[in-house]
Image (cartoon, rainbow, N blue to C red):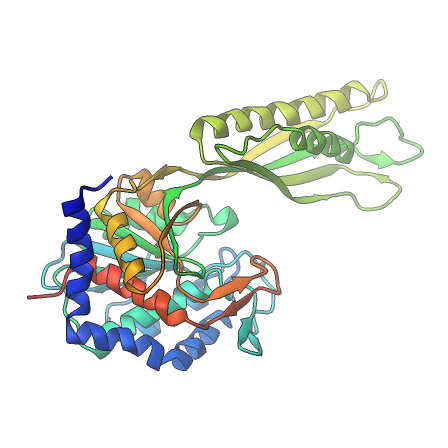
Length: 409
C-alpha cells in the first residue's frame, strides 16, 4: 500500500488541478456541452466498424481530432487512428485511447435510435462511449488552450474485440512509431465512473474443426459424424469444475456445421473462449480443453463403422490475451482513485480484458476507465447507453490525464 504521505500527495495533485481556472472551465464544459457530446457519440457510432473493418470510423475520428488542433492525426500501419498533442516536453508520453471496433459482423445496421434518454445501437456503449469520451477530452483541452508539461497521444485502436486479438494495441506498443516512448497507457472503455481496471484478465480463444467424409443419414449411418464429435466435446468442456476463486470461465460461443437434417455433415466448428484471473488456472483449463476435444474425436472415431474414414481434428488458436496487473499501490492507480473521489464517486478496482492487457504485459503502467453513463444488453443488437451524468466520467478522465502529464509552468 502507498504510504500516507504518498497518498496525500496524489490527492493534492488532483486538488491542485481543481484550483486552476482553466481546468475548472474544462470540467464544466462536459456538463454544459452534454447534448453536443451525445450527438458526437451518435455520429461516430453510426459508422459501421465490424471486425477488421474499422477504417471508415478511424478516418472520421482522425478528421474530428484535426478539428481539435491535432493536425497530424493519421492512421498507422495497423489502422489505428493516432494523434499527438505535444506538451512542453515529449515525455512523459501518455496514451489516451478507446477502441474503434465492435463485435458485430459486416452487414449489421449501426443506425442509432433514441428511446427516451437512451441511445440504442450495436456497440453504442462498447466502445462508442469511450470514443465519445476521447473526443470530448481532446475538445476540452483545445477549447481552453490547456498546455501540458508532458505529451498526450490520442489513439482509436483497431482489433480490441474477439478475433482482433488486441492487434491495434499490440502494434501501437510494440512496433508503432511511438512504441519506445510511451510511459503510461490509459484506455476509455464502456460506461461507469467507479471502475478502475488495473488487472488484465488473461484469455485464450480457439476455433475447433472436426472434419469427415460426410454422407447420407440412413445409407451411411455409422460414419464418423463431426457434429456428434462436437457435441461430445461441448459436454466434456461444460463439465469442467471452474473455480470461483480465482475466477475462471469458459464459453462455447459459436457453432456451425451441417447442411440438412438427413445429411451427415462433412465438418463442424466451434469457437471457444477460456479465461481466468490466474495464469496457472488458465493453463490448467487450457490443457483440459485440449484433452476434451482430442477425446471427443477419439470416441467418435472409435464408434464409427469399419472401413469408414476417421474424423480429422484441427485446433487453431485465434486469440491469446496476456494477463498481469498494474499494482494497486502504483502512482497511476493512486491518481485514478484520487480522480474518482474528486468527482464524487468511490473507486473500485477491477479485473477485465481490454487493450490495457498489452501494455501491462509489457511493463507499461496501464488502467482502463469507464467513460461515464450507464448501459445494458452489451454485445447484442439491442445494446443501449444512457448518457445521464456522463460528465462525471469525462471529468475523471480529464483529471487523471492532466495529473499524469502535468500543466505547463
